[in-house]
Amino acid sequence: MAQMSKNARNSSATQTFNCPCGGEIKMKSLFVSGKLKNVAECQKCNRQERKPRDFR
Ligand SMILES: [Zn+2]
Image (tube, rainbow, N blue to C red; front, side, top):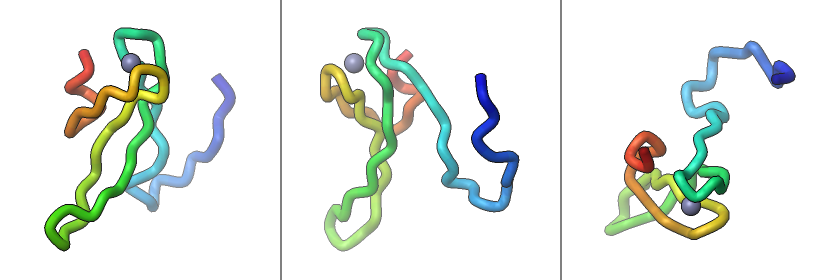
């Protein structure tokens, strides 16, 4: 794997997770009831979970 960045300052930096379907999981930020909420969404099957780890 190529190293994109070693910059650890940003805690919301890119992490890659994969859905059981093989799709790539991306984090999305949504505003729900006036609050910023992060959800993880599979790019392939569009499944959404609260955390990327919930896909396993
Ligand atoms: Zn999926």
